[in-house]
Amino acid sequence: MKIITKISESRDEINVFRCVGKRIGFVPTMGYLHEGHLSLVKKCREENDIVVVSIFVNPTQFGAGEDFERYPKDLKKDAALLQGAGVDFLFTPSVEEMYPEGFSTAISVSGISDGLCGSSRPGHFDGVALVVTKLLNIIMPHKAYFGMKDYQQLQVIKRFVADLNMNTKIIGMPIIRETDGLALSSRNIYLNADERKSALCLSRSFAFVYEALEGGETEVSEVKTIVENFIKDHPHTRIDYVQFVDPETLKPVKDLTKDFLLALAVYVGKARLIDNNIFKVM
Ligand code: PAF
Image (cartoon, rainbow, N blue to C red):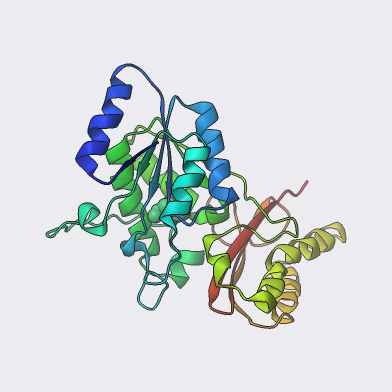
């Protein structure tokens, strides 16, 4: 695996393979890798000739007071994991390389980025759209892989890639969970032992929704109250949002008679955790 820090070098190296018809797959990450990231890398390895992974903690997607400064990092461990997973290129640019002096461009995706994390973290998806556009322009992959834990992020990326006619197929991959149900996240490192126990309330709340649906409940407000009360019963938790939305538009659903996405954002101690599940309704 070759580690590259410069944009020009990554272009030169990867172009060699593109020119001879090799398929380029790409997994963008912010590092501190876990099995969720590695599941993306595995799929990317299966479906492409050349696998490129980026590690870049992107400052433009963090708001004031968020965890940009303390975002966990372990480049040595990440590089060893990626090497073991058969990655060809690891692209780890500096902030100055990605955003040199004079950088002045913004990208904003309206509609799909308005609710959920878009409301709680103003500007977050502008930052994601900007960095993913830059990374896709630099790597020019045939396919790029993203986890469905960041469900809204995936929809935002699909939207601007289509809108801007970018020549990359965006692949969404299932959430990877610990055996007890906690969705894998680099931010789980912020949880102490008690908070780790409380964090299970996100994924465990899904069972109450299935139970309510089986009982014939179709009122959003009823099921929302059940989920909120369950989460609030757990120490160290503070709900950011509990939203029942259309899986395509991410607009709130009026009732639970059609397929819907339950999207959760909950602070557990210092960690802001997100999780989601699509409920199929007959
Ligand atoms: O999901 C992430 O890790 C980041 O938001 C991404 C897509 C790498 C952009 O910085």
